Picture 1 (cartoon, helix red, strand yellow):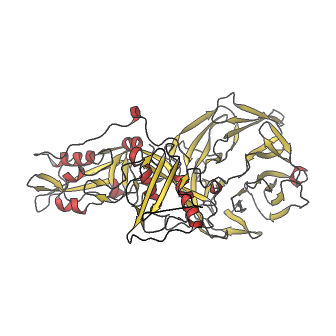
Picture 2 (cartoon, helix red, strand yellow; picture 1 turned 120 degrees about the horizontal axis):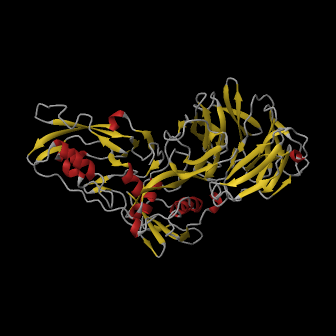
Picture 3 (tube, one colour; picture 1 turned 180 degrees about the vertical axis):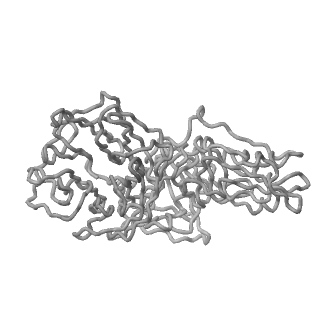
Length: 595
């Protein structure tokens, strides 16, 4: 695990009972593979001992740290034995601090002598990250949460901790073995598309129940996402699975919650379907609210393929490639690129980049000078191109979201200016941490909720940052949240040449290692890295990626001859080997999927 595994962590963390975290402990729960581990791959159970008579303060703290790793399921019953009765009754850990190792800066010697004869031990957690009360991964832990003080007092049965930490403290190796990253699905404000929120959930019997619990907690209050699970509900029991069908029994405090309307039921079931489909052992599910089954058109059992039309990658979006060949727009498969029939296929416009909308009906193009943003149909419809921006200084490749909004970043001398198309004209939006910066590349998620950018920090290093975009149901952008730096501190220093989507919640990042050696890595939109890494011994000029599952992600390789004329162009499949390379016409200067 890297020091910046940023993502929502489904510790969710979870009310506590006297015997442990009240995470659901039975039943399993589109973006990941199987939920659980095979029998031989399951991590060993951890059954830590409680405190022993005669334990020193140092041994009590060490024992407490180990006891927080008790599994399965994740529980705190043994850890509570290291606390005073008063501390045990009050302790409600609401998140996790995940660390690589720990040291005792004060050598576990007494650093504070209290009047009652108590003492304090201090432990420093190394490479520590933390989650908040809801489970959002906050990155590097604060100083009080990474340098933890353990006050102890001497009671009849030995030393006990009087003030335990507010989080569970667990090693990264423990966390990696027992948690996996998936997504919760909520709706955008228009209820037209699902927005995935990456989460880490415990593997095994707690998997499905924890995801249902996460959906019941509602979206983050600072976002404009919507949930159609009625508020005020909780799961009666964990989510059992029988014959591939999960049963979700929800209840309210009153016991007579109002059932959702048919339209609301459709959206609620779609949220659950996309979330539960991440468990390959679940093929269907039933939902009840206060004992009454949720129905859609008289049906009470739903498949995990329900709600395909709300796919975050946009169902029915084009999977063709589009680019420029000798200044003319082309489209098709990697092996068969043809000149489009629309205005940009005629070669009358001097363009340096083009970007079709998600259904490849319209295309935005930037002039070779970087000053003009054009909008035109992809095919010949008789409609002439229209200039959306005419005074740009250095326009980057535009991108589209599902609403038909074109997004653009102008790299002005005064710093980047972000704008989007709404009701026929470009409107500027301030994106703290991106606007006014030296932006080298950017992406917009297809659901329109995230803006990812590469920002040049100094002459040697770039940063990867992300802002959440807040919108209304009619497609208006209300504001953008300050961008978070999701650059992996263990990543290679240096520049980022390009970025592209790999899934709805992850991107691939292109790093030049030398003039003809490049590395491509994958990172979550919340900063979590994964094991995907490819080194390419060739001159890679860009990435061609899409969030559509099953479509190849390419490195675009291009070189010129001694006379400056194009010599070679090819697409390298990042999931394949060197032989999985498709030659394209050397005159092709750019290729991409619809954005």
